[in-house]
Image 1 (cartoon, rainbow, N blue to C red):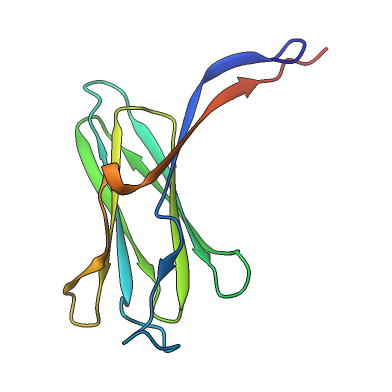
Image 2 (image 1 turned 180 degrees about the vertical axis):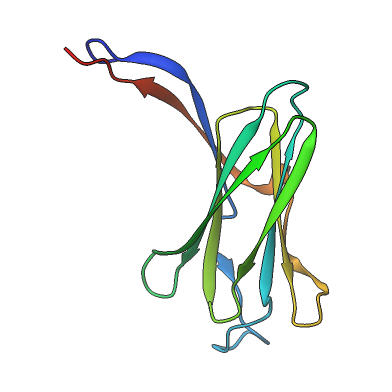
Length: 137
């Protein structure tokens, strides 16, 4: 901790890691057309904010889209992300509450789940960071 920085809590980051999204193992994108990024706030009394980021990994990592969910206590929500043109992608969830559960579900053009592109909370890579608040002089 530096000087007058104060720990304000934790930031929880969950990632799918790199996801291959090709049809038949080729270079044509689109095994999944969409990804349903879901979040559940299990807190009994506090709202939760979840930031969802979609990255394109076709050669270099590039932010494609950012969505924010604001969840009331004991509620859930989701964002639909378009991955139809992405050969590779990553979905990241950022939240400030350990009581939030997240998951990602790839769906094909007919709305069917793509089994290889479904990620439950336990399957996501988790990073926990300390959140600091800087105090001025």
